[in-house]
Length: 171
Image (cartoon, rainbow, N blue to C red; front, side, top):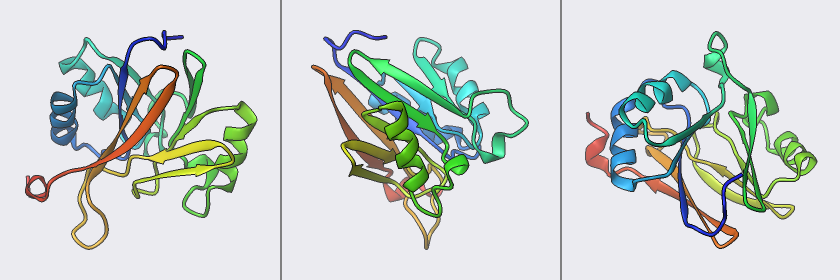
């Protein structure tokens, strides 16, 4: 459990698919306290950890990480706040969020973090905030590259999606 009296910044990645350059740049620009990776190439986060070893890391496996050791879901506690992490494929989030909503209610969380769909969003349902940071890879006709930021302060949290500028797409 982490004290809730100081501001804590979390940066959230999912579906990085070996795009460590954008992860590294996002960490440098945002100066987070905690890095969260929601799967699909969690080894990317392990490689980044070697460069930014002073940060705290939490990661879960995605559907492409089946041969990689790790957890499918995690619970994090920040003071009175409780966060749930999963990639989302186990809860079939590409179909709908009903299974994830059920699980989040079951474990009694304030924030449920998930990936898998590659679509960034922040949604509030049943008193729970659901956040998908999107993906760091840009698809010209489908999606913008993005990651998530969560700021915790004074017992509450704020979620933001950060979209990468267009000039970063052509690396």
